[in-house]
Image (cartoon, rainbow, N blue to C red; front, side, top):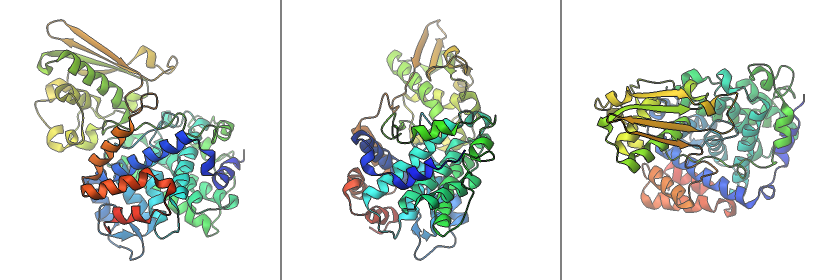
Length: 453
């Protein structure tokens, strides 16, 4: 089946098609994403990537956020994408079951340098990229379950779509861009809890830039490379069962940034930890639980989670983000979960290990694949004196049905951005992004992120 609907959507989309709630949501997520890029740009995984790949700076390239160097756009996109996912603090999509913004924003920031791009055009390109990658997941619902990391695979398609929109590519060239990206996409879940997971996002961002620039220059791909009989959707579906009609009919109907919207994270760890962590925090604060008196903690999760939270004995902050035992135990002892809790000394804290060994994960009866109608987690704490406390969480705070307030989003941004920028710089950047659709260009954003301002 031809996927001409995707290139047409890319080339014909306008900001006026997005309802006001979607415009507001897109700006919130754009702000949040740039904040977490800043927060993650000096993490070890980003630093190592910059040291390996940023050795040949470009005098007229794109900024590598947090570092005094420019690189050619493909490399800048990769490095900024690694930073975006370094803390696993970036937003996620209920539709896509992945992280849609980091790779698109990183690609667009790299591509926008030197281009006469208005704020409205940048915001539209972002919304288009998120829309395409999120709705591609509808065509291949088993993709994630077979071990593919949607953020990297579908993210490559989405980043290419966003870049094609930013460059104003016509339908034919947009077809080539998503076709090229379909052969560049990869990323497996076995690498969760390692530095390669953030690299997945960086790779998707780079793939999007490569695909769009090649397509702009006349490079070709098969017109059915995404939805054809040997195309991306069939090959990557795992079972071979796919339905491009589900994707095409949903593009812009409604826009993902409007309905259901994207989850903005409250905790800097894998999304699958958020519901059990929230339950643990609520129980800890409500009952004034003494962690030393806990006999056992049982965490009921949905069927996907045991294949995601695969690190039970973490030896690094990266591994701890994919360890339910660590995140729940830390939440119970601290009553919260913050960036500093994933510092190495916190992760290796010997006093926490006994409690971690008493935290167990199981698939909740409501979370089985054949019965699940709603994602959830249920945490049950059994105390040594026989008391039992239980809390069930369906939509965690930050979920579109329980969204963070604008004030919470701003506070998170300032907390993240001031790890690199001065407070005044961060405030100015936030104000600019909050009104991005009315701004004449994005160069002021790039100037702040590059350290030129």
